[in-house]
Length: 292
Ligand SMILES: [Zn+2]
Image (tube, rainbow, N blue to C red):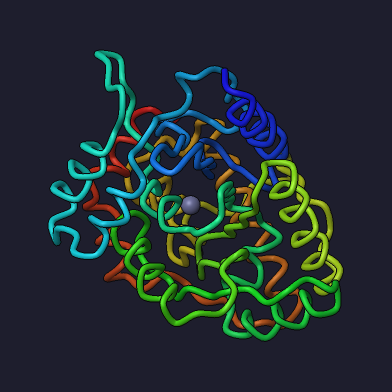
């Protein structure tokens, strides 16, 4: 394995080992190996298990960036176009992460995307942007970009496509009702930044440790107030809510919701029209079918 890929795999495992950062198969990572090739996590592979080259998919990222200037409207056509940017496709080739286009668009070399519960607390409330700005400033971290909620995959990548030309820093991106993206020129630097941002948010909001084994919240309460996409997939999409991934996802909802209520912040759920859009998505169905 190339050293850069090995470092990314190590950073991915470090993130995946902490259920506060990655519940089930959630989260994804990438590295741009040269001017053409980007290695991105394969769909259906958990961060904690990333160890071999087969856990990554190689994509022609300049081509993918070009495609994002005028992507297909149809989700299936969009996914097929992303898949057609693969390099060295074999019989056993896996599909790239649903967020591959997001990774391609990010300017920096190494990109880490997690569903960290500590970022999810501000990312799922009306006061989030102010809280994040204050937390990062207090910790001496630069500014972050903020993307309003968009369905993972095509819509989220388009939101980033529109945000990038507006300028401003994009090393750190908060995705409302979804999670955190950090980027840097090496995997260890990106991992350190991820740790730093999470620590800053925990300090600002006085957030306790995430306990994945805490009593689970009521499934109906979570289903009726979906804070993030994976929760929708597991509670409304017929996803295996009793799987370990489903239980971790439910525990994350419980943690984020409890933290918001206890701090008298205003929780914001994903609008119903957008949960319906998510449930129609072919790529989420694929992910659900491989979730363990
Ligand atoms: Zn995500």
